[in-house]
Length: 363
Image (cartoon, rainbow, N blue to C red; front, side, top):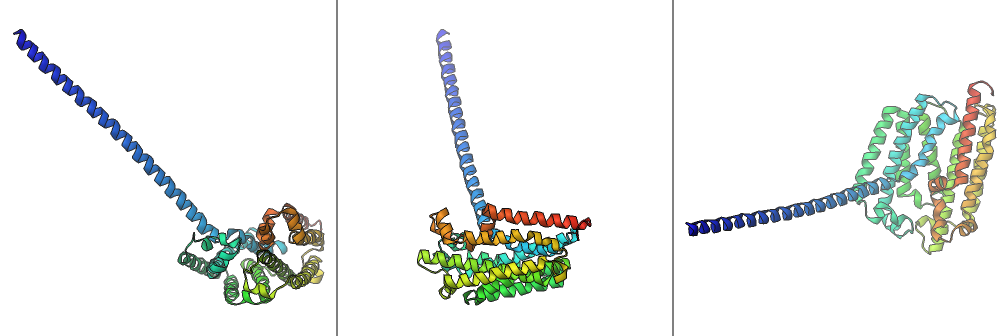
């Protein structure tokens, strides 16, 4: 009996040990499974984060291809209610719609322009970083985005006002002519840039049913011509530093020629603005008190010329690519504090004059 009990006890011990060993094995397998699952989750999370980062970078590249910094040029559509002193809610909404439509249109042609000039941009020290030139945005995708933006601008423009739609259409035709021929034709290239600004101003007037002063339109054309000439000066100077010309038209320009053209455009800008600000007596602004804003205009023009001066560029920075900064007016406006303060000063003083006139304190 004792022997049977011992045998039974041994069997029980062996069974218990076997169960314990199996439990340990199961627990070990569970731990391994948890670790493997945790590792898989970490890998999946890393892949998801990487995918999200890539999608974000891809979205930013496509958005950057639209050149949103260039949209500051379309702010001139707000000049119609501002210069006419008709800052009503309806006028502001109409100007906002015109601004968006011109942003769509200009971005569509920036995409086309970058596609056409992709090889030249790759040789440019700054433009080679653009999304299309660097390969971040494919050419078919860029062309598809361009068609969607342009068709949307034309449809919405005609829906808002036929004159706005016609202005956008004329602007689009001008951009086609510019990309195909005018940008390679000396003098006409900067004239086309000036006409583009005038069409933007007319688009803002069409969207708000405001009649603009002819002096204001001439001033807009002269100022745009001035900026276009400054852009060519910066491009030519940077090309001479680098030893290669990024644009074919630069072979027909020289710095002395552009300096003489700049002088004509500067005089035209100041004279036409002075005539417009003289008041209703010359079919200009609605009050002669706008003459008080003339010093801000003069300072802004002189400041821009200072920033484009080679000696000033050399004094501020030894980086040769800084020599091409004034070929991008929107960056100069946003980065130079004195110039930005001059623009803000002009806006504040104009609003003060508008407020005083609305209360009848000035005429």
